[in-house]
Image (cartoon, rainbow, N blue to C red; front, side, top):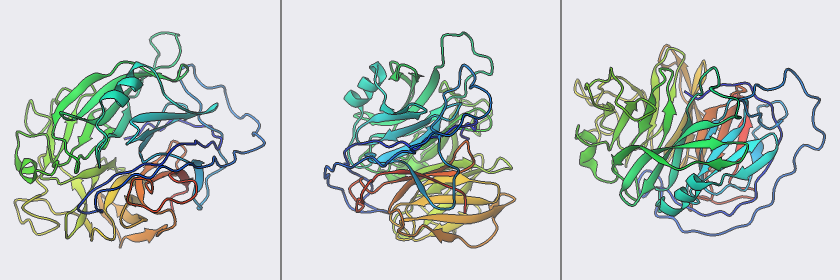
Length: 403
């Protein structure tokens, strides 16, 4: 679950290049890369009067944005194949860019690319090919009482692809200096390939680190309890298996997954996940401890007593789902091939109505959706990943009220 601090706000944009990449099945064919220069969108000309108390010493104020509306509004433009978005206490925004293997920070002073030894390591040793690269991230919630008065710093977890597979690393983010400290491995040994790398990570309401992995184009690993591929994993933020996992001493929470790229929790604490199918059906699943979701033996429903059926399915042309967000009454799914935001009415841990297709082709391919600290939906487009048709200003981070 994402931290939900209070936020301040200002529309800021970034100028970057547009490159590419995504999946041969359940999305499209291997991408090509076409550089493009984009122009920053204008920021708000008159800043609002300051409101409320000064931020706490270990908060990082975010940009001053107008009140969210039902219409998607640009927060950042010109992003290069963005993959994930998260927030610091105080409202500052972080965005990963997959192919450039870099992290951007947007705070009250504007937007910048983070530097430092960790940033250099990311660029030097992240394997950026097809669906691999710098993928998900999670801010580790800081202690309630700062341990010192040296200024804000935050532990940041990152999921990335390397030449030896996928891994989760930890770094220390100094938002004042704009730097990432040296990388420390938290979890290694996740199978990696050009395709099906999973990559979404999150700190759950239980304080544990949750990691979604893919089958790395080797279907059998999803049913192999000894492999980290094709699984959803649960562990401490330091990478140790959570003490009450289904298999004592192991990190696996659920198995039988092809390529999970969305994780979020509903109000009752149920973990909801979005997953790419292959030829027939994409899925939304409610993940239970020890559940087997069938891949590659079952795609979609029909697993009987052995496998857990999905609660929602679409054809890959309608969805190809990546990020997922949950509000009090709905689940929102970002669709790549489907070029839409799907809204699934939700109550008591299950769908409560038929899915509704929103923003159909309004923004193109959508990679991520999350609920921000302001209660708005924050959505990343993915039109510069080699499969979309980039529009002026792509790729972009937009913000809107939940429909």
